[in-house]
Image (cartoon, rainbow, N blue to C red):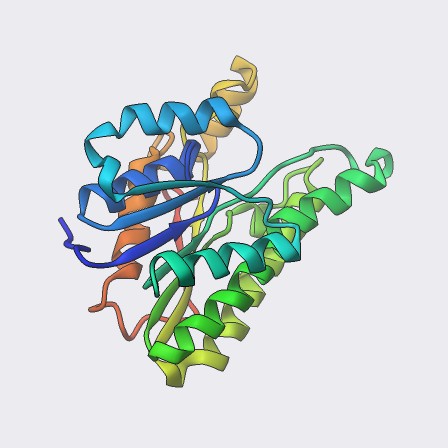
Length: 246
């Protein structure tokens, strides 16, 4: 549908799940894609195998977005190897569910650090680069859980709500520099997180959705690609829900 030839795109958490769908969408549209992963070597290898036809446009990098020095080094690598980039998709995220009274302190901090602090680090260095070119697209992957906040997900919901606020604030800071900042907020998407649910819980979630089906990673990717277009230049500070009408 879209043509991103000549553009370089960064996708964190870009080798599996929703991130894989986003990376593959950009690759099919002609972009060079730097897809990062944190620990899952096998998923990164599988992504490479599945997209061997795009080998020349694919760069898989290991990156812990919670480590400021690693993020700084990653953007130094981008400057040295690519000179510039046009699009950043902050997709890296984790869940560690537990009712709040029983939640381990480490589980609270781990989720906040990856989902929110990691996005802050990526945005900080991305903006410094994009402002020099006076053009860029930043898309943060949030979740409808910022509004629904299911029980057992206080840390996850808080991190995703914070991500929406970060997006809106940053969009106002960089708007005059030709940089747009938006959120895509998926609902229930058919990744390993959904496939691993007990049947009864899957049925309960499905009953909440007006479209009566779970979404696919490619449907999230389509919305991300739209927001990354040069033509989407008047859309910023927005939250686009991909949730089947939830």
